[in-house]
Amino acid sequence: MNKDKWIVLVLVLVVSGFFTCVAFADAKLVFKDKRIDINETSTNDFSSRAVAEGEAYIITGPFAELEEKNTVYGIPLGKKSTYYYLVSNTDYETFAKAVDSDTDNFFSGMTWYVVSVSDEDMVDEFDKAVKRFDRWMQSYNNLWTLFEESGYNPELDEQKIEDMLDQLPDESIKISGFLRNQSSNSKYKKYRDEFLESGNLSSDDIGELLLDVDKEGANTGDTEKMIFFVAAGVFVISFILLILAVVKTIKKKKSQEL
Image (cartoon, rainbow, N blue to C red; front, side):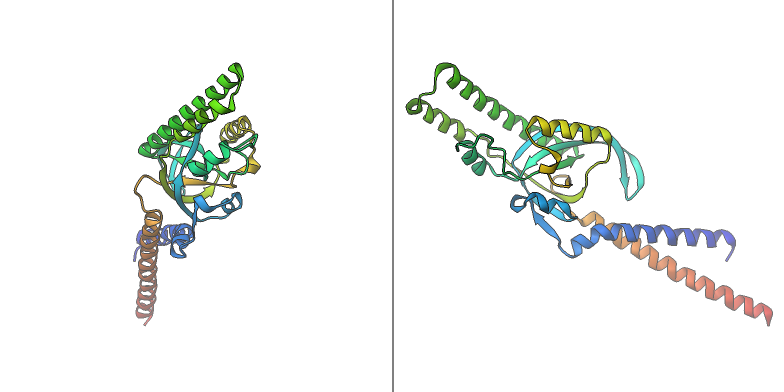
């Protein structure tokens, strides 16, 4: 085997070995079926890697839009726009009960986490959900402003509040993806902290990891498993070919000596 073929074979072995090791970190979560239901979680559940899935109800933002490198395990594939939203795992029924209670800040006690969305269709779905919830919140705040200006009458106005709660949007977005580290981008951290502060929250009130949302209808983990199996297959084949080449070279060398 000439020198160029040796170099190519070794490079293929190294690259495929790298992808096998890196892809295994994600594939292992799928093989072990390490999944969490985001609607049954607490902030602490967003501190370790896992596949997360469930329904997104209360969505606000996006608090940041960043153009980032689109990479697959370190291999650059161009650029992509990523949008970051703040989501609560509280469903609308629970939220309505909190609003109807005597709690000063009905957002307290909820589990908040960040989602990153790059797929254009999913971004569109998230933006629509944000607008629905923002419109309702604005109407709710306007109602209480009216009460403050005209005087609150429990006998008359409790029904208005009840009617307003009945108008709370009940659409949700089915989401799934991997829990990953939050961006280390300084702009991201600045925008995130400012947005949290506007809602009387801090980075301590959200999960350490964020949910990297897949495109709608995607089976989370399929791509990672495919990359792992392909990389592992190429690694095994190139390793066998390298061993055979070494054995052939040794035999040829001994034959020449004889």
